[in-house]
Image (cartoon, rainbow, N blue to C red):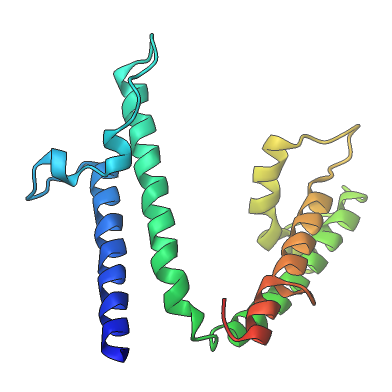
Length: 185
């Protein structure tokens, strides 16, 4: 009975790996040894005809996106059971993420206070400690969220984002905490 279970696990694993490879081949259109009709996943072969006015480039882009989504879903089916038994990575991950989130939260709060005093040079010593690590993130965010009435709110946005991910991953009901307590996925 145990050998039959091992065989079933191997067959299932190799099926998902082959499916992921087929999805990757369909997505990037790499040359394969098999004919294209065989290498094409069945969910792509049975697509309804393209809408009227759809361009071939749009159809190809939709096909690639579908193939990438299929490949990602398949990779998750293989990766989740493989990592379900081993949770040794959770402790070190939490040990790195927790101080990282805390330090960046403090840096962004410091940047919020510094934005109230624009006369300070952010390249001078005490201020560059907070400015240099946060400025790339703030610059990218300012393109999406411009200052409101002359007030830069992007550091507060980042504090909210970091707090959200900290709670979702590391909080008492966080994903990593649950995985660590239950011993797997």
